[in-house]
Image 1: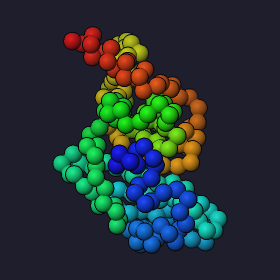
Image 2 (image 1 turned 180 degrees about the vertical axis):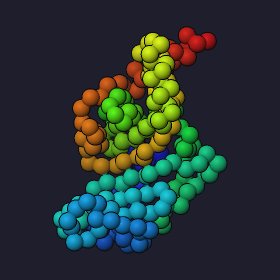
Image 3 (image 1 turned 90 degrees about the vertical axis):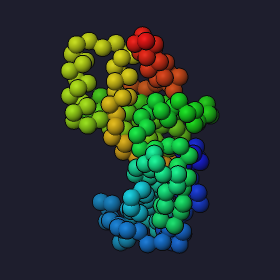
Length: 208
């Protein structure tokens, strides 16, 4: 898992492999679909419960996106992903964005940014030049944050509550341009890792 977060490669599974090479590596998928395209072969493959892979639309159908759909439970050391066995490296399904950032997984050369989207589907993401991690909030969480915001929250308090309420993990995506995969592309508030953690840290300090 740690290597995937840093490199975008899941062991031997990496972008640019052909569909045949992925098939030989992982075996047959649990399901597949055309991914909304008119390609003569299914381009989106799923390996329950952790992995999806998406191929390009033209032969030889090169691997374009690797998605780890969910994180392992905290009580498991290893998880099986198709024919691959992954050590979770201490990462688990209850972690929030600040938990990942506090682990100092990425170096400065990874050009890391933390994004906050306030649109109709408010999410927080962590983007590097290799991967993108995405979290959403539940309807209940959105309503709670809205009520608290109406009472007046500082920027630090708002970011902290968003982080705490981001309990809907939407996956880790490895692609050629993770930042360009954002949807929508605009309307984001971006922070460096240090800025994001400083806002949360200042709120915790004030609470003490």
